[in-house]
Image (tube, rainbow, N blue to C red; front, side, top):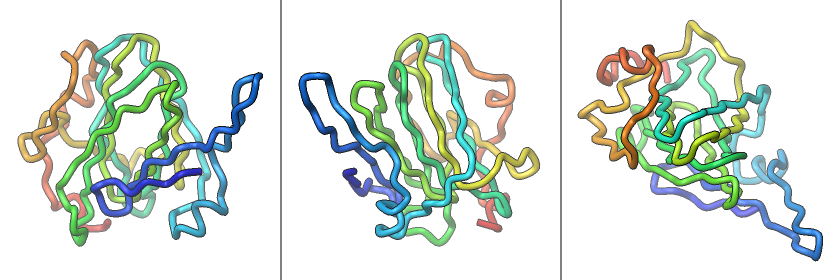
Length: 182
């Protein structure tokens, strides 16, 4: 597995090393030992899938606060997404900075998202599926979000928004007060 540090402290692009032959290829997409030797959170306890029917669907920006803050490993298993993360760790050198990465079923890349990051994505194709691995269980009482178009972040989304949930539309602008436990 290949780990590439992003511009955000602690966030990585993870790529499988493909062993090709005449049948196609074989590759590991998860190895606890590979994450542990890099001092990355390797305690993944839950997996989820997000299926999105329409190109332009936007989900985000979401995170879980302590005591259920979670690390995520996110991969696109069908279609493609513009995946965005924002560092909201108050003590981080990359606090309030964001990056975006295109994840596709073809490029097989995954994004390692540390605790304290907000996450969201926009689909670039119809019928796109995202596979999540998380280090903590979903906790509705710890789940929070911020507006996808919050002027504090100035995220450049690639597509017109075709679908967005009512909840995501109604999130308020970011404020650091909610993050004091991270």
